[in-house]
Amino acid sequence: MAELTTLARPYARAAFETAESQGSLAHWSEVLTLAGQVAANSDVKELLAHPGVDRSTKADIILEFAGTEVSEPVRNFFAILAERGRLALLPQISELFRKFRADLERTVEIDVTAAFELTEEQQQKLAEALSKKLERQVTLSTQADKALIGGVIVRTGDMVIDASVRGKLEKLADTLGA
Image 1 (cartoon, rainbow, N blue to C red):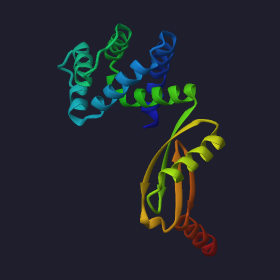
Image 2 (cartoon, one colour):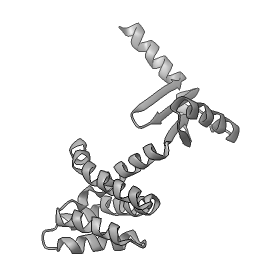
Image 3 (cartoon, one colour):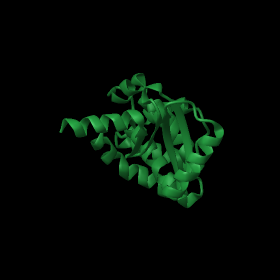
Image 4 (cartoon, rainbow, N blue to C red):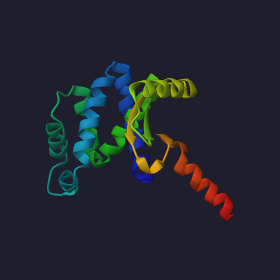
């Protein structure tokens, strides 16, 4: 996975810089997200790996499946990916593009797992606290997991804050076992 991300990074950076210079981040983001989802499909992966299908046809098929209007610069970007045999990197390119955009716009998506369903007020307070801590606009995605017993687990990127009772019990067990 890390190798694919390494290969995808220059393409994602080029797409991001082009989109930013054109003031069309939303358009590029939409197309890349849809194309990334299409390219991640197992049947499409087989198509992309098939040597009998022309590379430019592969790009056209992905754009057709994405089902959205595509600007000429985006179409050119896909033509370059096809020419270089890099259409299979679209899921990674899409993810990197999303991260570059979030960094620019100072936003972050956070997954919160709680022992119980959080009320709107609790979600708002948590979002405000995390927004202050991270100095970014926060978007929360929440789910409940009764196995946590109590508390929450907060995840974003490579940051994990485990403030759950289960996590604390596991840490205590590890400490006592050592």
